[in-house]
Length: 116
Length: 113
Image 1 (cartoon, rainbow over the protein chains, first blue to last red):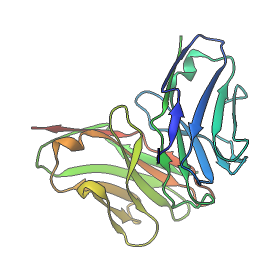
Image 2: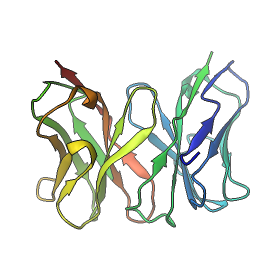
Image 3: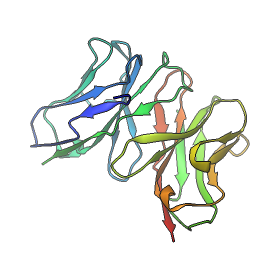
């Protein structure tokens, strides 16, 4: 497919469990972003990769959240010891630039995480 | 720090009426501004973007927005609403040193027949 894909589309887990959310960006896109969207809110920035490295992780709420992009393509967002407050839609986006501000970010459909 | 404020969490218009969704930003440097639309259970789709070129920006589906520096605004308009325009609309600003987007709270647009 030509767009950004995210798996799973839905994830239900129990409080305290570990989860991994996957993002496949558009082929060739060097920049990859993770956002979190809570109900009734706008997306909130989490982390931004340029290639394999995290260029900006200032949005990660605490050390339970971690993301990797080992080969500069697919990225995984990892959440340890999940809490009910982590329930949200996690969005991934990619862009073709080296982080140039004006370039368009293409968003995936999101992963809806529910922590019971 | 940059921020975005969208006035009105819910706007309702009749089909064929003018659509006006308000967005004000705060930035100490020239911003890049975006409007995204989100249909139910779908990802965000870019409607239009302002990148310091023309202040009146035309986007997809008949939408346009005007950058007004003096008012720090970037309001989204469409002359005639269509039922298919019903969705959530987000205004966003980009920081000049990086690509991350800072979003407003969103405005849900309803279109009545």
